[in-house]
Length: 387
Image (cartoon, rainbow, N blue to C red; front, side, top):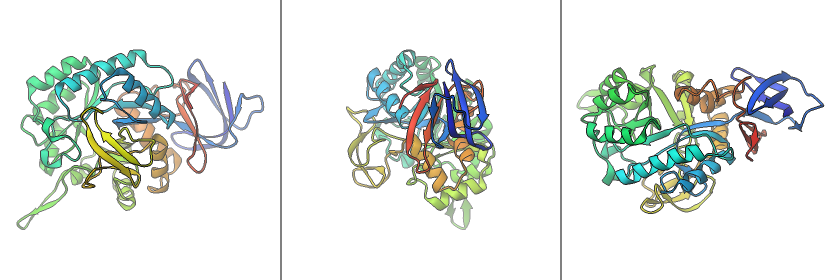
């Protein structure tokens, strides 16, 4: 398949009018210029890497923890048609039974995945080891401290499917957890946390490399008497080792703060994520955060999901293409920087950058096509058109 007359977004530049060739699921050539003998002429639209979302709970009316393998397939298909070609299905705090069902269903869904669904190389466990005071929309009855006998049981059940795990590093037992889990090649991320600056530093020493939904459900500087005590947000700027993930829906992080983060933080250590719940793809209405049988009621309005009492946000409804629009229009990033943030950097974090995350010869043909108004035209996974 040869696609021509397209603006190709590479890691360091944009080919203004180019041609891309796909054979046997992979990109085999990228050339400057428009070629008449092509299969598809895209009329000058953008062609860019598919979104790699390391934090998503669902989409299109499905949550990854709804309880059936079919729900995982449904969420993965919905994410794909909105531009996400790879994701880490993400949990919420839950009972062990629900968590273990999710892990079993995901492993089965990985084996049965088709190309009209985004890739799912592993899971992101968001909890249950969180600080109750920073629980956000997490269900408090399932929040517990990290105990070795518990997380080892989870790891045994997961059998290698966990790619990332979020934890509050100030909890008793958290440092041992971070050291144990990171030594297994799992990315450990600080989240839903009241940790102070020094505690974050110790967590970094023990193997923590990320912060979960930066500026959401985490501590910032406070005063104790006359003394200023720095928190997690300040540590995110200070420690170069920490990658910060930004909910790039234009709601969770306001425009000026978004620009500030990109001004102060090394861009190699910033990723954009959706933190989307089942309402992604819908504009308004009632919904549920978490499993459909016992999740938390939420309302979708103003471009975001909120708890029913409007006391806080409850996950986003952002789609893959919305992340692109937010980072381009609000953060003011050029296209190569946008896709480094939402595609290449996330792929690198989970060790998949040799296969996905950028438009390069030899990589899987996972890409999206969109116009100047960020209207999604088409999505390809392994060279097959999904949308």
